Length: 318
Ligand code: CP
Ligand code: NVA
Image (cartoon, rainbow, N blue to C red; front, top):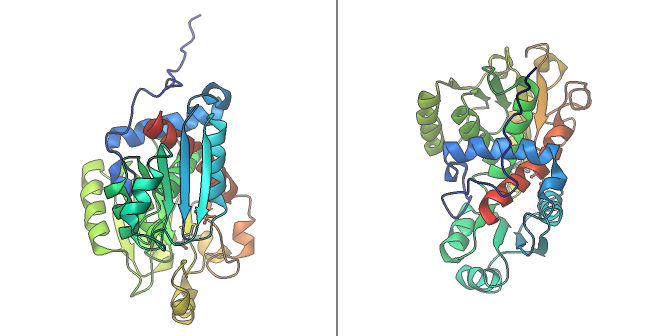
């Protein structure tokens, strides 16, 4: 009897990212995205095989906004790959120009992971830094989140199944990254959002182009029920992102019909999963019942932040 041993990505990745930075999802090529997901699955399965892969390498985390998942998973990823991390909280460029920050930090570390208010900040850091810059969330994108999201969806449904991902809520940073990444992988993607909370039109145009290449269907609707219908994954995020606190009252009113509750979730497939990048405001964008249901995959998704980011660091820094 012959057994087929599936090929595994090498512990020292054979595919390095072609661009220096990950500022937006499209900074990874299709091949790099595909390879990264394979590597993330391998790292998850065989973590000890990668324990020394980033030996002697360091990353700096520059965070303007609070974080639980992103900070801890990047710090742990660096450590578990044999490297180091340092953390710095506060306005990036608050005390000195960004071009000076970038050219100090890049002398000390091999990569910069930045969580910022304005996307221009990560662009400016990357312009001046000789070390790769990873966007750990800006007002436009959350590419590291999208990697863990598609990893989680593939784990549940496989890479071949034509899944429908329904994002119900704000056309925000998380929606942008998931839309781009999902349609590139051939996943059908529907965004259900209120009037006035559409995603950035340039991102939509890019996603339409990618969908036509991959054969994915891309739709945007203001009807949450139509968005949820027949979905394999129902995804939502907070109605008020960090930095939008002054809009809270207006947003809470507009998004109320878009709450993911048991009634809306019931419109998805019987085996559908519930996803949320977290942190959540339970009772607002999603009910406790949905978040605690046995079809909620939110903690698998959070776990995958670690594995996906390990794969990313391996491809960018090793
Ligand atoms: N999903 C996410 O980025 O979580 P944190 O804000 O806790 O990092
Ligand atoms: N859209 C949210 C995501 C947090 C992980 C925010 O930007 O605050």
